[in-house]
Length: 176
Image (cartoon, rainbow, N blue to C red):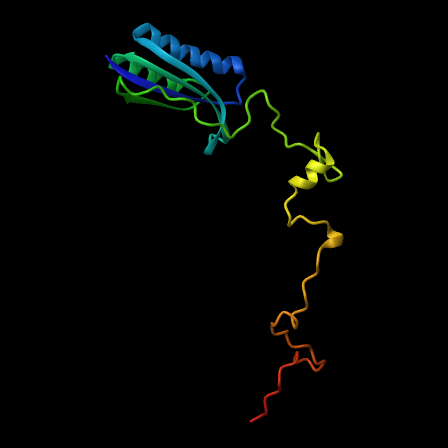
């Protein structure tokens, strides 16, 4: 028997018990025909691109030993299962170290998905001094902003001013 890893990307649009049921079904198939060595829930993570109009997925990871017949069963069942955005089965060497979950950039299922609201220029829950220190230098208040100098001062050519005769300052060409 060979060692394999299965990565499941489950649809976060389904409720948590439905996602857990799909993962448990895959786990049950693995344990029935092989040996489950490691299991890890990576949680809700942002996708690099949309899959089925979703930009996040609930990741589940399994490492197991199994015969090749189990791979065919898993492949068939996961292709037709509702709630599976993608899955991949990798063949790994037995001495390959177990993968740690990658660092997360997406909010977890228990955290708020909304940005903190700003109240009169202050971040919610932050002291006014901390907000002033956190503000980038180019975000100066409008009263202290310096207006751009006129085009003549900047060394640029200014556009010709209209002369009122309909030629917009263009020199007239003598008639031939």
